[in-house]
Image (cartoon, rainbow, N blue to C red):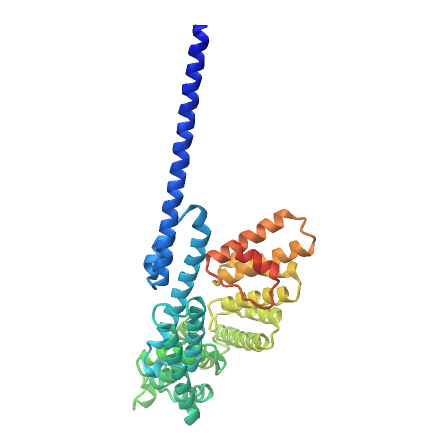
Length: 399
């Protein structure tokens, strides 16, 4: 009997101790969640007061039930700060470096910031008005002096280069590149012409033609090496000129290089035309052909081929060919061509669209799609609101 009473007493003590432990853990959990709520509220207050850096640091510490909300704020803050920084980089340029295209980009970025928080730090509304006014002034200046437009700058730059006034040519072509880096000037992108003219301006002047007593012609091997050096540095115009001065019979290598330059320029020019026409598959092939001749040649054929791959993937996605879109976008993702947020978003969207179209039976495909969308979200990619299935947009927003 005594043993039974002792056992009952021991059981009561054990039960009380377990209940006490559970109550302690429950209180600790409530307290921990209360601390997280306080931290979250402090972060929101800092956000509302435009103390973005303080808010960001606090949101990044939030865990538990409020972590999803905190991540949404973190995404907003990072997108706002990136957009603001990009816009200010343009607005802080000196007047002679401003151009309509970059100011239009600044306007777009400021609108992104305003959409997130209209009264955010830095007075984005006033900055937007400033950017619009500066863009208007630049456009009016170009209208008054057409020679300052893209075509005029290109023509003047080419004329100056033809007369070996490379410093002037560099200033003009670099102004053109700042306004429109991809503008085709003399068969090359403006940014390349800018780099070329700037490099030529730094080279010592060749006064041999004006010398009264010209030295003997340099050996053909030396001339060939100079021509090869110009080719290797992507100065195709100079390389062509030097190769053409060599005898094709005594220097068969010169003829081979001239053929490479001709085929490269033809492929690149054809690729540019096809890309403008929206023929991305043909353009990609043409860029690849140029890259097979000289991978690091002028016009960046390798990266342009990858860009065409991306454009092809996007075109196929919006055409409903989700299988082909996935293949091309996966190639882009593996090539690491940049724009990873955009690539992974549309890669995930292509896979998710296939999942929906096929009846939602392939759970592995759905998981794979959501993983790509998560990567896009980590990159801060903002999904476009138009031309996308609400189911895809809802899935993205829910991550």
